[in-house]
Image (cartoon, rainbow, N blue to C red; front, side, top):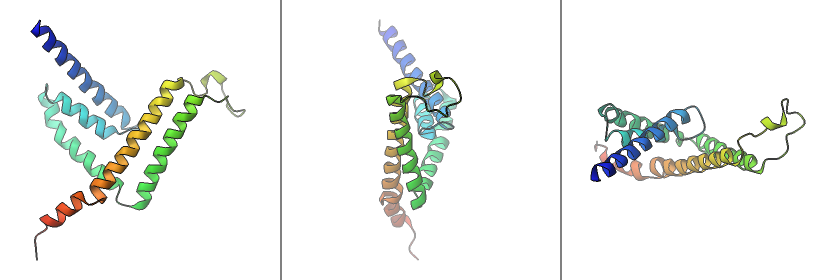
Amino acid sequence: MADAKSGLRRLAVEGLGWVLTVAGVAALVLPGPGLLLLFAGLAVLSNQYDWAAKRVEPVKKKAFETAEQSVQTTPRILGSTVGALLLGAVGVLWIVQPAAPGWWPVRDSWWLFGGWAVGATLILSALIALGMIVYSFRRFRGGQDRDRQIELRPVD
């Protein structure tokens, strides 16, 4: 019985790793935290596969570099925040399901298809994006790493 439990646990963990990895790859081109999900998926898979363990550190480094660059200027921060808020607003629109507008060129059934599940996913992506903006701002502009870097600089 213990073997069955450990086998099921391994299958569940490995399944989670693959879901996170695939979602991360998809989110590289779709709205969402692609590098973060990819990093999480590879971190989980690294417990089972050597190839994943070799790729965790480079993906983590790139994810942190991207996060740091995203908060270097006020226009970037504002653009990212507005984008995340718009994504959330589209999610709300998707859930509310207003009637198709007159300019919609195809059948009305193609207007905002997918229903509440798509809307909830868009809202969740927006919340994750806003959380990542706050995290990146606090970590890379808010002082934690900057203070550490100042301490590590050699004295002239």
